[in-house]
Image (cartoon, rainbow, N blue to C red; front, side, top):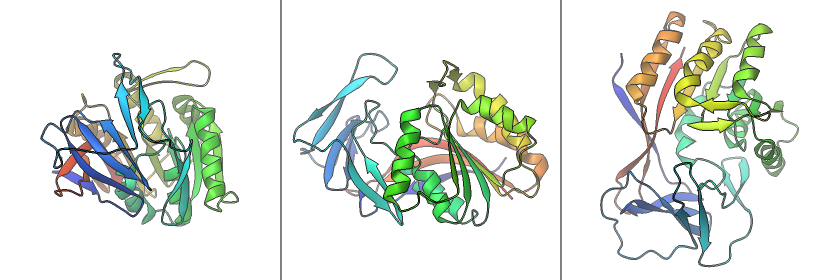
Length: 286
């Protein structure tokens, strides 16, 4: 097993973690500031008072319910960018804003390995990662169970001037799609998967991370070979360990040679430079 690695997302022009503490975090998305719950921010914040444009108030259930309280009126969507990729941010019912900024260093790592590559993005959501890799010269198959998310991905492609790029946008259950690709003897140069803790497919399929991740990764292994370039797995379920998913990837992909890395993802706070952990990851590269 390799040592654990911390991958750090630094602020950029249109996004930053401004401050965090007391179980919350203050972020900037373009010209708007929002406060969201953050259980890992157990320390005290830098500032005694925040003045956000909106605050997410969690519900009493454990499935991520809650509502946004707008202190000033925000547009339904507003445009952001990273590099050549433009995309819409919005206050979603799931407490995030339509993309995951802590993925930025993972996108950059994959971009360096994506020129003239055939890539599969499972649980691709609104397509920001897909467009980052397409911009690096890759051909993408983007899969998500949510038709609304896939439609937003297509809109983000139009915003970026990339609606003619070689991207297949597919609404499907990730497990069923991957199993069909195995039966078709498909090959990919790289795979990105960012599975939720719990989800449902377009026809009611149930996804539970602890039960379904290992079989899905086994199918992903069948879509790669020794000429493939990478697999990146990110997990936001706090009850899982980086060591656990790292060992799972090592056992499934170790026969391909190359390198397996695992560890934590974190974002750097502007106020003090401290690191706020957000997720765990494991990745294989050749």
